[in-house]
Length: 628
Image 1 (cartoon, rainbow, N blue to C red):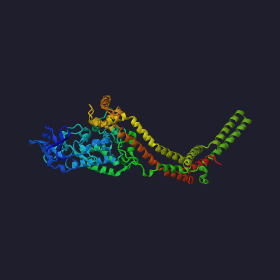
Image 2: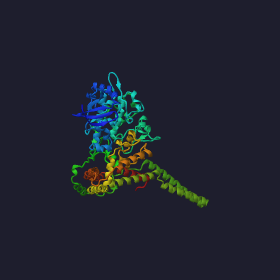
Image 3: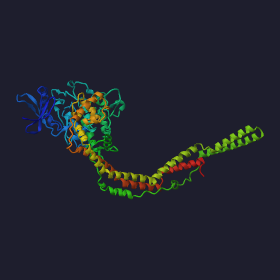
Image 4: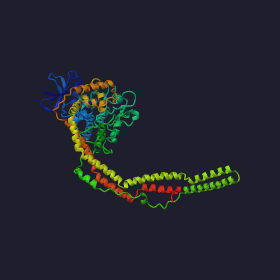
């Protein structure tokens, strides 16, 4: 065969096109690596693995040099595919998968699970499962490359997977030499769960978060110590997720429970973790339970959620996570007609006095407790009057001062007994307050107040809607004035940290940064890195120097039109506001009519809470003797 252009190069060798073949590529090992791989590749070809899975670029044929020495193997070419990291990272997704929405991510997660399931069915174990060996197409199809690193067993021996990425390696294998360890499908299940988590949770690593113990907690240590950052068992993990991330149950309880199990200690033995086949079922059911956001069609969420979690998340972050597809109701073609309908509606009349619509309370009688209290009070008053008479007699006939004291004390006791309503006075005060509260609520709903408040609210929304074109023009004009700043930002955003070489910042630290939303040189420049665990002053300075080096390469070009992406963001922001306003305005006439009907009903039929409060107050008036 004749080698065509180079497709890619790695530590083991290089992958080339084959002249005259559009769908087959060839991997040629470096001279020092070829002897190590020879026997394994021959065995994989002999086993016919390439016919067992459409998801994997298995060896098709052994390739020898002209001198007969082993050189490598042919495999199917994954044309048009990009790494899964380009999909799950929000920064790279904007560039590499600009039309991907939530359903696309879920579909890719389904296909990834199916791909790993097919590998296990063929008798292989991936072993070194990580983002670099997994490719995704623009149709969410998945292909795994680097199949020559899989663990493979034939009738004679086991060809182990000798490498692994710590961020995808389960706790039971952390720090262990892979040369002497057989990998299992349960080990693969851990790496798969990490990748699925990253696909669904904006590229965040499940073990990257804020640690509430002493010192820093890097991802490898967190895995070793079983500290799943999103777990509901916060008292055990002492971890919490980074800010501005989806909640663990945003994709439904079944997905939440599957991740909790996959990252639990009890799942480490046997086949305790959800298998790829299990995930196929879980994600298939998730796809069936997704509903589309009423504001942005790129947002899809589990039907058990009361509202769209992505809208809330984007509001907190301040930018779109997906290519927005805002919904404009077709029945809102004429906002002016909606406003006219709002204005034509007549307010409910002022309500009558609440007392005048109360049912008769003639059945109310003084309670037995009140009667007993009144009887005791009468006896006390009679005794006080008798004491007063005795006091007057003593004062006149025996001892003036003593008699006056007796008479005065008796008089005080008399008026005290006369005015003592005891608990009935307290009840009267409380019941009167409750009546006044219920009456005010009823008057607001039965009269024009609530209706006019709501109508004013909708008219404010209509005014905001009418002002959107001017607001859009102002924002676009502001973009033109800030053209240099926008070009600088686009330049910095195009430099992804994951693809950069920064001293001391390897894959683990990059995963931590990504989990806290730092993916590009622009993120480094514009975000607070001081709050990210494990990034002290020295690491911060390295990142700043890298960002500065990227910035220094920027060259402003006044002749370039305003960045189309920035224009799209402005138009998307206005479109989102318009969709939200129209969603509310279209409900205005029916909502206001509902308030009119409710007011009429409340005037004709007083609500039970109002009647109960009135009855309670009248009973308290009877018992306390304050009514005629």
